[in-house]
Image 1 (cartoon, one colour):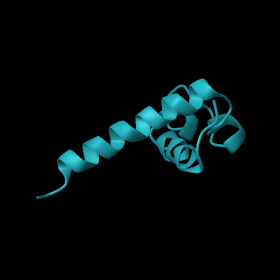
Image 2 (cartoon, rainbow, N blue to C red):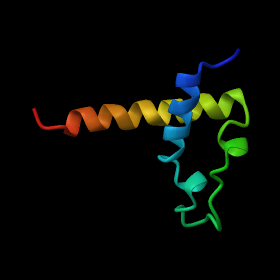
Image 3 (cartoon, rainbow, N blue to C red):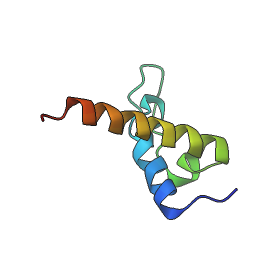
Image 4 (cartoon, rainbow, N blue to C red):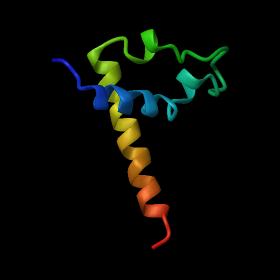
Length: 65
């Protein structure tokens, strides 16, 4: 199933929330932040969209009223 450009952008934003992909995980030796990795398959894209959704919800909760 194809993704919209908006969904792909959301997956890319979600990658920022993944310590392994960003190379900040203690076990990671480098960043895996290339588009070929971030958008490698449907499962990865879905997972990263979920990470972005979670980050956006957290920002909304923390935002001052």
